[in-house]
Structure formats: C-alpha cells, structure tokens
Length: 205
Image (cartoon, rainbow, N blue to C red; front, top):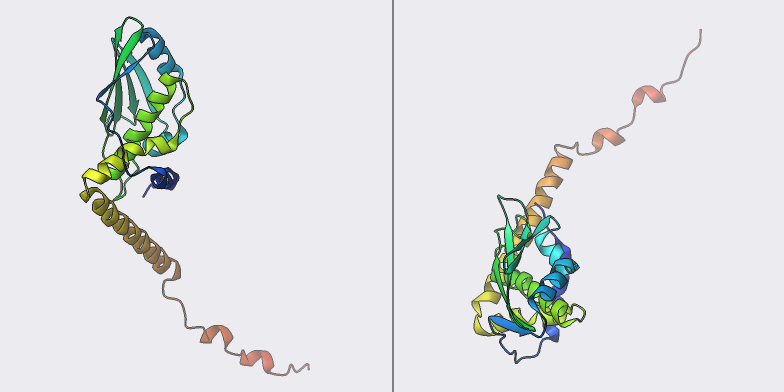
C-alpha cells in the first residue's frame, strides 16, 4: 500500500484560515497579456506540497488558449487545465480539474472530497502566485477547502471515516506481518534445558 504521508503537512494550514472566506470567481482576470501569462505558468516550478499529493510523473501540454498538466499514466491520470483568454493587456484565467482515483495511492483517504479539495486549492494558489508575482502561500491554498467545509459538513465526516479506515488497514497489516515473522515459535523450554551429556565426567583410558 503506497502512502504519501508528507502530503498531509498542508493540513496544518487549516488553522490559519479565517472563519469568513470570500469565494473566488470561476474566472480570474490578471493585468498581464495572455502570452506572458502562459510563459510564466509554463516555466514555473510546481510547489512541493502539490507534487507530494499528485506525484512527480507529469507532462505539460500547451494548447491553443490553454495549458494542461497531466499527472500519472494513461490508466490513472489527473488533469489540471488552465484556460487563458487574452483581452489586450489583461487575461481571463480559468481552472478546471479532473483528478484520478487514488491520487495519494491505494488508501481510503485518496478519494475523499477533502483530499481532492486540498490538491485543487494548492494548484489554484500556485497559478495565482505565479501570475501575480509572489511566493506560493500554503495558507492561502487552504481557503478553498475551508470554504467547502463551511458549506458541506459531510466533507469532514467522510474524511474522518476514511482516516479511521486507513489506520485500521495499517493495524491489520502490522498484525499480519507480526504473525508471519513469529510463526510457531517454541515456548523457550528447549532453549534453556540443560544438556545432561555436557555434565558427565570424561574418562580417559
């Protein structure tokens, strides 16, 4: 079972999110030309927290009016698409996601709404930081998930259930490994029983 526990470091950012979160529009306008926006995004390094979640095996495809990041292989691929619509010195930017099952590996947490929201929030923050010209802020990346938590209490319940299932899986694996390692061991009496032949005197003729 593959688990990328480092990806959960970003969860600490939830505490830094204020109770009131302003919803961002589906399309964001930036005061830079489309070509400049595309070049900045194409050359920018993806943040480590995001790579820890969706993996480092990805390709970037430049389409007409869009940039597409494809993570994973063809059988289990996640796609992050950024559309760019230039309007003179400004560009309207939209982001859509198609996140594959088991984005964190084959674990109960992989398909929860919270994990998917974390990945989406990190990518949105990456795009915004690159186009505005500032550093990636993991706390800002959590705002989208905080907003969803406010409107969808089921999201936290689902995550808690999945987390419990994952710990149960780990406990089961550890128990199975222990049983295999120990097997049918002797009770120890043979190991400490005295060797009577060793106590007999040696007679030399």
